Image (cartoon, rainbow, N blue to C red; front, side, top):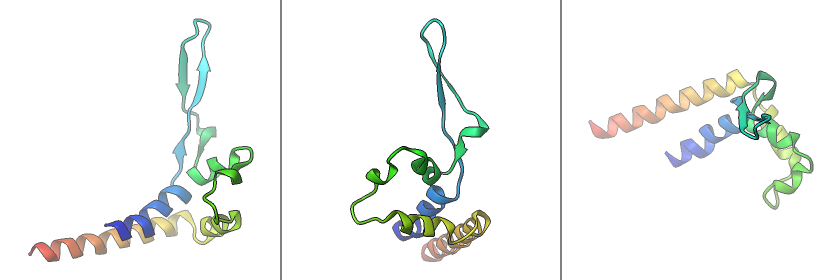
Length: 99
């Protein structure tokens, strides 16, 4: 499970799966409301890159160009297919052990 999460699931979520990021709006009474707009939909990596001085948040020894090449190494659809096939082989291995 750990290898599956590290090699397939986490990279897919961080570099290929879009997420909604909220926009906080304060009304005239001071109540804060969250709005989820399609314009604010991006992958977590794209959100990180949109922050000012985003490279300061990287783990020591992680060059920004390595993340960019990892994000561009395959398309979103290719990453999803790779995740699905890895998930299928993982589950087949789990069910074979139980039998």
